[in-house]
Image 1 (tube, rainbow, N blue to C red):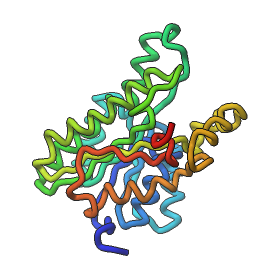
Image 2 (cartoon, rainbow, N blue to C red):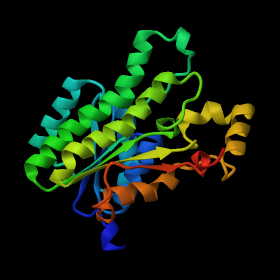
Image 3 (cartoon, rainbow, N blue to C red):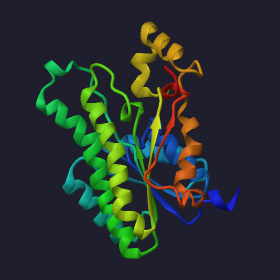
Length: 255
């Protein structure tokens, strides 16, 4: 393994990582030598995911807390401090989707999506960055955006707003934290074959639209995000900051 991409001795927290993209990110980081901390709200599901990675010989911990709740995030990081667990790498992956026309959207529904997809990234990154700055050793923050960080689609307004916010939050982090040797970047996945998208994949009309609209002609696989994640979490990207890299099979590149 090239030393540029070696994550040995690093500790990575991946939010929303008991399954789907988050689990794929965690597995990729572990395979490159990092100790990974899985996060979710369901303890049993987290332990199943952690067990699957431990069976492969990886160094894994888990932390069940609500990333959208400030008190819960604060308590989790205090627990990390007590365990002397220093997070060098953060992937803000936790997110939810809600499909509903704007005119029918309730304020609480809007707020729940923004809290989970955007505010959580601020809360977890704030606690992480405080400690990175205090240690003086820098670090890596990777926020997970979306195609909707650039383009809107009907019936997913709060998700679109949150993911657009992720792009600008990433730049705000760079503006304030780059001087502390913290690199904050983002990944914008295209349409990926995950549990969250099962209903869309099973819908012939939507499935056909994705395949015809994407130059690659197919849905992406979670593991196809691994290379970009490793790059942004490693020394290979030490002078890359405030960027969002789209891994979308070419969708945003064409009309």
